[in-house]
Image (cartoon, rainbow, N blue to C red; front, side):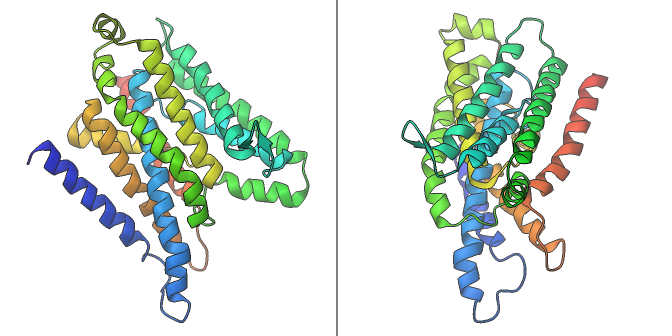
Length: 316
């Protein structure tokens, strides 16, 4: 099977999985079954596909840019920075604007970009090791988490409880209106990352070789990290922080199809689009009369994966 046919088959399989997840969960029988399906389940499946595609693609691109297979929006603090920005916006009032833009996504983008640029500076040092990047990401995640906790203490109990629920990461309240707000950011992010595949193909062979072949490494790195921050910020502003999608999906694609960016990036997009709705549907059926937020499911899956990857690298 040629590469194009394989990609087409993956696309059809992804669409089938996404649509099938809308029927997973409590029975839709009854007078409100159709309404639940069209107004709740289908929007959740579509939102999960969009968010999963962006987070997985961001993880794949960040790993290539930083030349670190453990670098993802979750492990380098991008998600935590976006979360802090959104919590600050919630305290100030989510209906406010910043230079004409809605405050929520703008604050998420500023927080995500600030943390990502710090990690990029650490990773760009000649003697930076994988452990250095991860430790810097952990430190920034802890720092932003402490600031987020302080922000929650400064608001009333209702706002603090809403912020806590949002921080778990959930697709429960995502309807077609929020999908409409998220879609432009998803399109910009994914198209930009697909456009970056060619320079990433050169960059994966080494920074010095990429420079000799005419790739403007700082420009590509800045654009890639900016796109990753934009996509992660939009996802966090829409449904809260959802961790480890950008770690799990690219590593699965590497195992199945290889690490070349021309395969890794589109493969991660398709796998992420199917993976997150599947996790969301699992959260609907694990407990009776109660749903587990999808962010909890991905964290439970991603934490042991990260542990195994770190221990495997240390053995090497």
